[in-house]
Image (tube, rainbow, N blue to C red; front, side, top):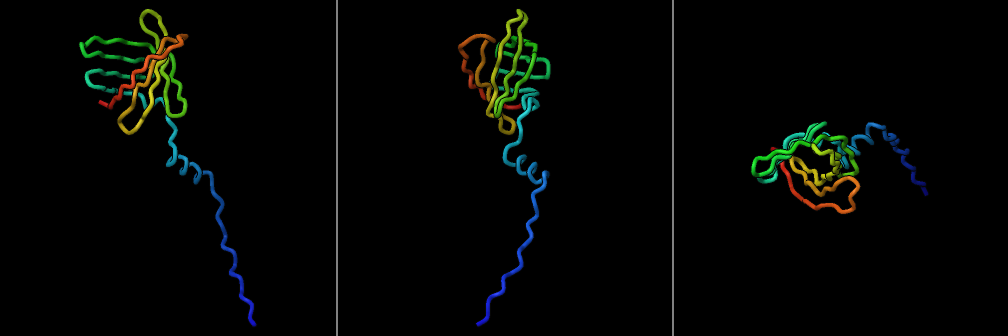
Length: 125
């Protein structure tokens, strides 16, 4: 009776760091504040965000300029810290980034307990 021969083991190539980076980029690209920069429209409301300034134009044409002190990225959301011309500081949360679309989720004055919900969907314009 003949014994079966075992096939030689197949060598396995160890994963390289570049393999892991490619998988991470496909699975979950890292959100940065750059995703928020530019011109956005939600109906007749328009906003423009730059690294230092947020311009908000209302349907009647009035425009508000807010100085941005910082952007904070937390998972799939971006928090924008800004102040108006009366030095009131606020924080606004954006999320739902997908292609040329994002959502202004909510906002509040810094130090306030309650958030104002907006859930405004914006598209690049």
